[in-house]
Image 1 (cartoon, rainbow, N blue to C red):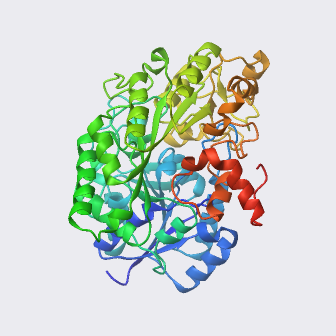
Image 2 (cartoon, rainbow, N blue to C red; image 1 turned 45 degrees about the vertical axis):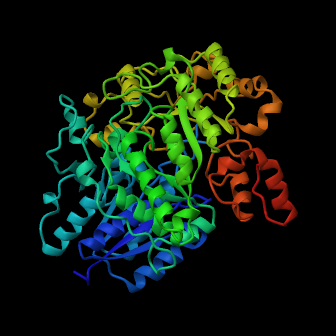
Image 3 (cartoon, helix red, strand yellow; image 1 turned 135 degrees about the vertical axis):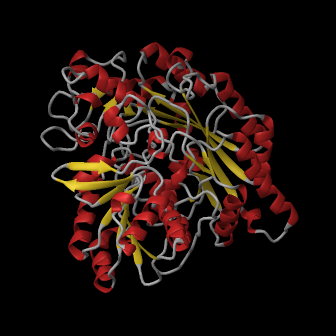
Length: 572
């Protein structure tokens, strides 16, 4: 099959750039199937992307084009910037330049794949991990088999009709339209678990991992895919699968060794949370330590690991293994401190909560004991949030001896998150629900539950588009917060009173170590990633590692950038 080329395109224009790990995963699997793979990466040349596409497709005639959609929008409740328009612009240009069929996938894409196949006007889509499905589709195109023989493949039938080939993997029973969408399925079969994903630097038409790292992007590593938990705001169990698909320990550590050998020393875990399925996580850490102890020349001695974590499970053995393996920082996400708000919010598949705030306290203590940095991330504005619960949450999290505490006000609402489905049921197609909001809404937000929709496309579209066609990403803010009734009643009302309360209530002496939302959504103080002024300065000065690790020094770093004549974006 060597003459058959599959082209993978990264349309993401966010800076600091985020390494398109998915394209390395897809490349690895496609090469195993015998295909040649080209990666056309627009991120590092975002200002000249039409030229990049034209130059490539002028000389190449691929069998299939894959486009990764990592993010539909910033998911930042104050800014609410949508990327889909510029992604469609890229896809439209690809369509003009080649007759090859186009397939899209990615985590953002998987949050509303049927609506996006229709919106982009593409041939196919993948919900969840894409490596198995894209390989089977490419093989079908080569052999002349029908794409309808590829389990899990989403197919654009035209005229707004989008279907999905059945997989035989059980979803959630009794939800006919959602079952057609693949809601609640086990997607472990879609994951290439045994092979170290090939990571390259400097190779033509491949992901350049070192270039991303040099421009501020952390290296990335996946130890498992999917999640069996049913946390209310989270899309990952649906988008990635409702079971853990663990990769083999050797494959993961081989990949880490390959990246560090290329000079990519700061790696972050891209699992839902690294400490879930903790026995597997400990096995990976032990293998890193074993290789370091038995080989003085191993590049793993240069490893600086950054992990995402839940408050539990996180015992002292885990903390010790993290430190010995080279972990520099732990980003822990308790969401809140109140039991009454967390009950039914952060839960297992059996709807039981798996941690308390005492577990968060313990994580912070253990990270300090073993010399690691720690960031605590908090979600404010969930259902039931009041001024009193807000104060309590701030007081308790500020009392933690964490490196940084980050506060997000507002929650992104997706079609297949438990919160999104619940709000659709409460609207019932006839009413709006207090707290539903979008900065760009021009009419009342009234959602339909899936069973009232004529198609999966219709169900998904309402979470991103108004009926008139304009973008309207949905967010939720507790209506019990101190906002004016007029604000709560408006579909585009902004919770600015609560925002101001946060700034007034938190002492200015704490500002250096907190991330607070800002009304403009883009200043040196907020934790919005896309084109953030602090992050841009950090990257241009050559700092490496998780950006929050330098958060306390942001004023000094921005002034250093200015002193060196580096252009600092507006907002700083």
